[in-house]
Amino acid sequence: MSLVSVSLLNRLAAAGLLALGCAAHAQGVAQAATTPPPGTMTGAYGQSLQQQQQQQQAQADNRAAPAAKPANAGDAVSRFLSDRGLIATAETGGSSRLLDSVRDTASDLVLSAMNFLGVRYTRGGNSVENGFDCSGFTRHIFEMSVGLILPRRADEQARMGSLLPIRKDDLKPGDLVFFNTMRATFSHVGIYVGEGKFIHAPRTGSAVRVEDMRDAYWAKRFTGARRADLKAAADAPVTR
Image (cartoon, rainbow, N blue to C red; front, side):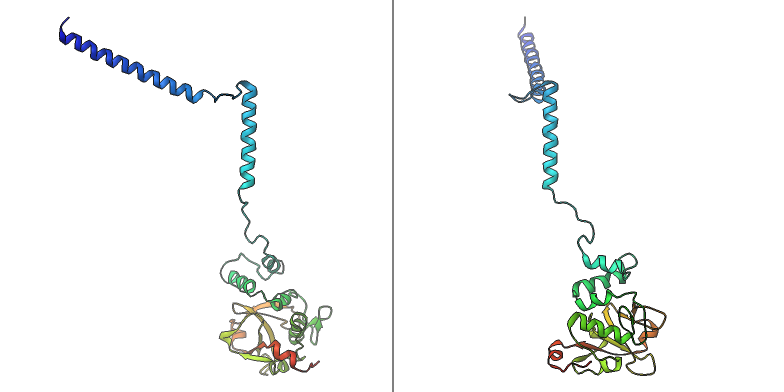
């Protein structure tokens, strides 16, 4: 046999050995992938144990993962406003901003006022049982929520010394807002709730409700706003 043939056979043999080695390696890898670790039980019982362990691990992972909270979960203010009909539509645009304003302010006075949405208007009324007129409503809310006794009439409330005049641009939830609805400067009063809206007892045949001060009717009749100075009110004589 020539040296060329010997060399060729050697190369073929080497290639064959290499091929056999690759096949053996691949088979070993496959066996390693399918062979369970030492001590692992096989058969139907072993598979059952593995499934049980996997289920237990999945349950543990679920308990460890934080639960997703629904929108407004635990938000009592949102539920309260929705139940009372103040936010009657989806919380978008103005309704959403109004809700944020009330929630962020956390005004007990405003929330107290909203609790009376739907109470009927009664001229001279100052209670839930008898109904409210505009000044009877504001008087009741201020006394109940912040302990401030307001005068009975709207014009007297506007002139009360412990109520500070506020510019329209500086309004905050809880401020009193006044309107000329009977050819008198301070003939109507309500409570500002935010985003240009106020709550009031409007007129005979209606009930306590929220309206927009920017509507043409109210915008041209707005005559001023007042804010309670509770420190001054505490030192002032009580007027009933």
